[in-house]
Amino acid sequence: MSTDPFRGRVAVITGGGGGIGSALARAFAARGARVALADVDPEAAARVAKELEAGGAEAVPFAVDVTDRADVHHLADAVCERFGGVHIVCNNAGVAVGGEMWSAPMEDWEYTMAVNFWGVLYGVQAFVPRILEHGEGGHVVNTASMAGLTGMSFLGMYCASKFAVVGLTESLSRELRGRGVGVSVLCPMIVQTERRKAAQAAPDAAPPPMRGGVIQADEVAGKVVRAIDSGELYILTHPEQREILSRRAARIDAAFGDDAA
Ligand SMILES: NC(=O)c1ccc[n+]([C@@H]2O[C@H](COP(=O)([O-])OP(=O)(O)OC[C@H]3O[C@@H](n4cnc5c(N)ncnc54)[C@H](O)[C@@H]3O)[C@@H](O)[C@H]2O)c1
Figure 1: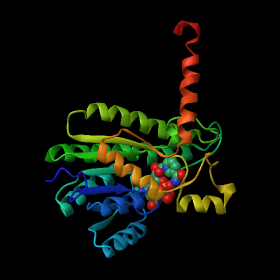
Figure 2: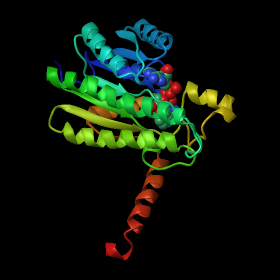
Figure 3: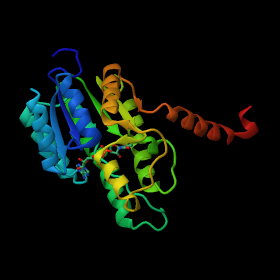
Figure 4: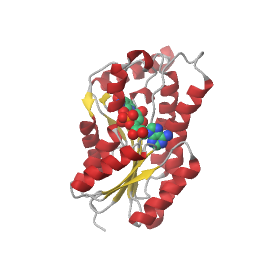
């Protein structure tokens, strides 16, 4: 096996049927990876797989609901059976639900946590042991958000789920240190996807948008590829994130008051 993290390697991407997930699939395939596109919408996954195959890549769609633990473990079995193993796992499927956290229906909380948090944990539990087992190395990319690094009004459910993903992933990177498996957490600000276009068409039904520039999913995928190449933990997508995160760190620092001296 070559040391190239992509060529001939197998990547599984949840939420691979659209948006950032399909852009990851295109970027990985362009580097010679074999790709498993896992999505709750099998037709969307099949469309992306067909497009990649037409370009000469090996790409296979799988139906999975990441909120179902057994389903995610079946996915891991099916991917390993089809490809003989797995190296890169992108726990990327996610949903954004907005609203006041004190009045939001519990179903909204449960759905948000089920997809965004439990879905990521199930992916880690199903795939990390398989990557460790073959000893060829690999990489885990968990998709969080800028909403996992700073609180945002009326996005409390989303923020809580994404902060959980950041915490889980920082811890995972420590637990996997020296084991040959890289770990990254993807924290984008606004990315142009079908979901965002739908939100723009029906603004009343959509969660409040984050403020900031809008970039394309392909640009995000390029940053993920570079992070896998270089083993970077944090994948940040927008230059304006730096100032926002510095201000947050300064607010926390200020809480020490004079004791900090
Ligand atoms: N687009 C943005 O601006 C943005 C910003 C920050 C973070 N993110 C995060 O990036 C990830 C991808 O978002 P996107 O914008 O590409 O979204 P998207 O809605 O365009 O695509 C998400 C994909 O996930 C699939 N999916 C949804 N629920 C699923 C489930 N239970 N099981 C399996 N698949 C499921 C959908 O069918 C869809 O194909 C998400 O985790 C999202 O929270 C997006």
